[in-house]
Every structure is written in structure tokens, then in C-alpha cells.
Length: 166
Image (cartoon, rainbow, N blue to C red; front, side, top):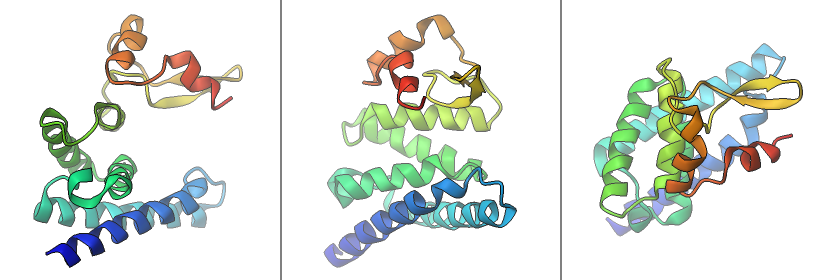
């Protein structure tokens, strides 16, 4: 079992590394690059679905900090696999409730899933686009409370967050 877990940790971190290398193609002008990105994230999403079915949420306690973060990244980028994102959200919520995962990543995944469902986000973590040189978030449930809600899960204020992207 220990060998399986070690191999799983390596597999997850390898998936995140491939994600980081190819993420630049997500919004490429080249359709072939976009397609390659979509195929990669779909393959990773499928594999995360198998991992969750076998192990539940891959927590830091199970696979280590880096591999747990990698699992979150894979879930975050499974945009065309809402079933995978919803399952990851559910399992990650349980992990956060038991102290086995962090609320910050959960907040990002919750917003991402809500946006992919066509709903308003909670924490303002998902950016819809840029207007007059400034990042604009997808619509939020309570825009006046975004910074307050972000603070409860350890996310910096919205203006500080988007300043990193401009």
C-alpha cells in the first residue's frame, strides 16, 4: 500500500507539472494548442475521478503537501468535467471539515465550479476578462462582501489579488 501511495503522489505531481507546462495554451490563438490543453486536462480529470473513487480526496496526510495541491489543480482545471469538479468539491469539503485540507483551495474550487455551472461565485476568485486594463471577476453572489468572505478563507483582498495579474 505504501508503494501505491508513493506512486500516486508522483503521478499527481507529474500531472501538475504537465499542467503548468501547457497551461499557456489554454487560451492560445492556435486551435491545435487549445485542443492539446483540453485533451490533457480531460485525461487528468478522468484519472482524478479514478483516484477519488479509490482513495477519496488525496489529502496531504495521504500523499503529501505537493501532491495534494496537484490534485486540487487538476480538479480546478477539469472545466469540461463538471461531474469531476463536483465530486472533488464534495470530497474536499469533507476534508476541510475534518481539518485534512485547507479552506483557501476549497474556495477557489467552489468558485470555479459555480462559474462552470453558470452561477454566481462566492469569493471572486474567477476572472471573466479584462476591461480598461483591469481584471473583472465573474459575477459574485454578494459583491459587497467579497473581501470579507475572502478573508475568512485566507485569500487576500480582491484588489491585491488582481494587482498581481496586471
